[in-house]
Image 1 (cartoon, rainbow over the protein chains, first blue to last red):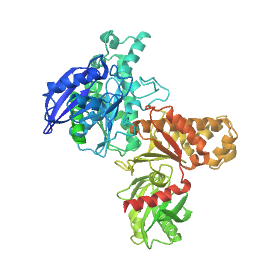
Image 2: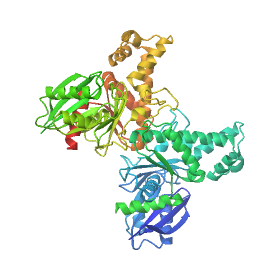
Image 3: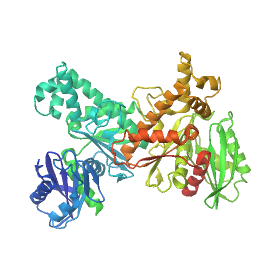
Image 4: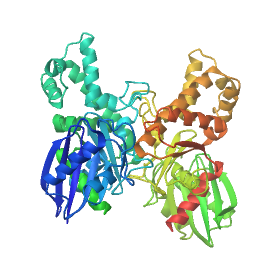
Length: 313
Length: 313
C-alpha cells in the first residue's frame, strides 16, 4: 500500500510517495503566485503525476500553511498563499475530484510536521510531543497521548501566537507580544531593518540588501558576531523559552521538538539554548523536559501529510 | 453504591457522601496544624465516621492541596499542610489502611474541582474544560476529550505558574512573573501591604489589620472604590486574561470555568471581566470561548474527589 504526502508551502509544493514505512520517491514544483486555489490544485496534481500518479495510491495527505478544518478538508485561512484570503477553500474535495476520486486528507503544516517527528523522528516513543516550527513565522503542533490535538476550531498548537510580552511587539496577525513577533524570521527581519534605519548598522541588512533576510543571512551575521543579530536572537531564545515553559507547565509534557528553516539552519546550539531558557522558567523542576532538534528536515511536512492520510484511512 | 469524597484543605477537611448521583450528607473538621500526615489521616477518618463510616462505601477519593502522583496515591508536595514538607506522603495507602482496606484514590484539589464542574457543574457537556481556581493561590485543572489530564509528573493544569510577565513579580514558588503572583489572594495581600507601607494608604490594610486579607476584605474595599484594590484587581484580571488566552490558543478549547474563594466572592462581574480580557488577547477570533463562574461553590472539591474515586473504580 502506498500513500502520497504533499507539503504545500508558500514557495514550493513538495511531495513524497510513502510505502512500506519508507519514502520511496519525491518531487517538487513552485507554488503558483497567481490563480488562487485552482492553480494550486493544478500544481499539486502535476506533482502527483511527477510521483507516478494517483493510480494504486490509497490516499493523499496535504499539509497546508494555515488554519484547517481537518474533518471537512477545508482551509480556513492561509495568509501565505496568494488568492486564498477571500473565503474558505474546500481543498480536500477539489483535489479529490481532480485526482479522480482518491481520498484526500488535509491538515495544518505544523500539525503534520509534528506528527512525522513523533512517528519517525526526534519525538519517537514519547506519549506527548510539542512541535515548534521556527521559520518565517512560528508554527506549532501538539501530540497528546499519541494523537494530534486539533482542537475545537482546528487552531490547536498555535504556540507562535501565545503571548510572551503582554502589550509587546506587534505580530503579523495583529496581536501584541506574541512569540512569533520575537522569534519568527519575518518579524526578526522587520526589527533588524528598523534598528538599521534608526542608525544601528548591522551586517544583516548589508548581507540581505533589498532581498529577503534568509536563515543563512542570520547564520552568517551571527558567525561575524553582529551585535543586532546576537541581541535579536537572544530575544528569540528567551521568548521561545517562556512560551515552551508555559506549555510544559500547563500540560506537563516532557518532549519538545524544534524544527523549521531558521532552527534547522542555526542548529543544535540554538536548540540547546532554547532548552536552557525553558528549563530556567519551568515550574516543576522535577520535569524531565528535553528540547530536541527535529530530525526529518525538509521532509517532515510531506512525510507527515502521508502519515496523516494513512492513519485517517 | 456510595462513595465518599474528601476535600483536604489547609484550614478544613470537608467530606461528602455521594450516592445515586447526589450528595447525601456532608461533614467537616479543622485541619490539624501539627502532627503531620498521621494527624491529618486521623482527622479524615473522623470525618468519614461523621459521615457514617466506610462500611458499605465502595471507595474514598481525596483532593489534596499540592502535587500528587495519582497512580501511586502519593502527595509529592503540599506547602499548605504543616509537616508535609519533608518527604513524599503515601496518603492513599495510609488512609486505606486506617479505613480497613477500602480503596482510596488521591488527586490534586484543583483537578478534582475541575472534574466536578465538568461532570455536574458549569462545564457540563463540554469536551474540554480548563478550570482556574482563584483563591490563596491560583490552581488549575484540565479536562481534554472528557478526561482529566494529569501529565507526566502529576503537575498538569498548573496555569497559576505559567508566566504572564517575564522577569516580573516574585511568586511564592520562587519563579518570576507567574499568574499566581498577580492573581492569588496571598500575593495580592503582599503587594497591597507593601504599597501601604510605602505610603499609599488603602482600606485593604485598614479592614484587615494584622489579620488575613480575606476575600470579603477585598470585596468591601472594592465596593468602597479603594484605589489600590481597584488597581491590583485590574492587574489580576489582565493577568488571568493573558494566561487563559495562552491556554486557549495552545489547546483551542472553548470552556473555561473560574472558581475558588476570591472568584466566588467577587462573583460573575469579575468572571465576566476575565472573559473580556481573555477574548481581547486571543489569536483565533473565531473561538467560541466562554469563561463561566463555577457552580458548585465549596462543594466542588469533595464532590469531585468522590467522582474521581467512582470513575477510577
